[in-house]
Length: 343
Image 1 (cartoon, helix red, strand yellow):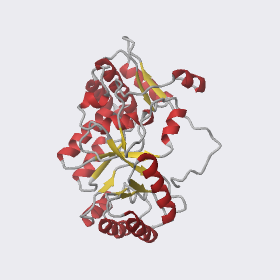
Image 2: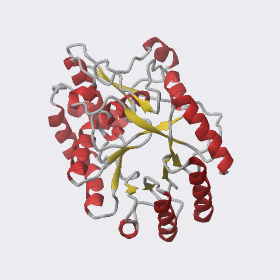
Image 3: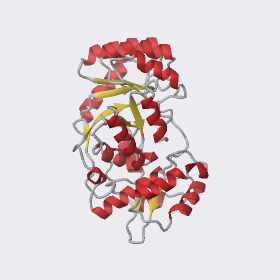
Image 4: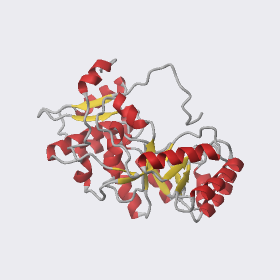
């Protein structure tokens, strides 16, 4: 398993979820549930008022146990309701929530290539020139000892002001995470993310206690469950909370407020729905979030999905669309000609 692009002869697919209203305003988001889950969802929501988002959230959230789904199962339906609300109000979602910034900083992330310092330096120089990005998160699977040497070499080459983070994606033991973490503290890294599997709550408590100069971020594999993430923060098993809006904007905003009251941040995982529109809108409305996770290939991928105005990095930042709702412009004729199934 790796973040490297290994190539495939299988075509990529993407789904669009459309929520229609009797007033002709549609809510759109990428990431539709499976056909079976769609039938459960239809049975619960058809005929409901789309402006009563909290009522629908409570109904579906409390029904999670009875429909045998994981929390967050209706997340992109909830996102469609926010799209509708923005279109009704004539406002982008960031303004609907109460905008806090005009743009969000970006950090580059991606695979490890051959893992050499020279390869990383070429990548980071390119990111600086193309997008003005001066922050990077490692996904490197060469092990703790090689990571320590690599991080030191790159810090010396990049200088103290360049922002660095490390996400070894569950490839460390607790002992390795503490050893690498102390070196990262000395080198001024911003955070250590998901160093080992997140079923190990007590191990994460030990890690958070051991690293006092740099936050630990867990919950990437738990972020479908807002309450579970909150429990981890309370238990001292994470310092920062990983989130993804595919689990629903309503629950994400609740968790962001909870984290803010506990002196913590929520940090968005990956690009986000609608080619990045969803996460950029939210990160310009949530004060306690740091930066957008940027993948170099994704603006091109968004165009392949028919999204005409996917947010892209400029001067190291991304700006939200000011169109109503999530602000995505979609070429529906293009989508229609590439559609392989509807349900």
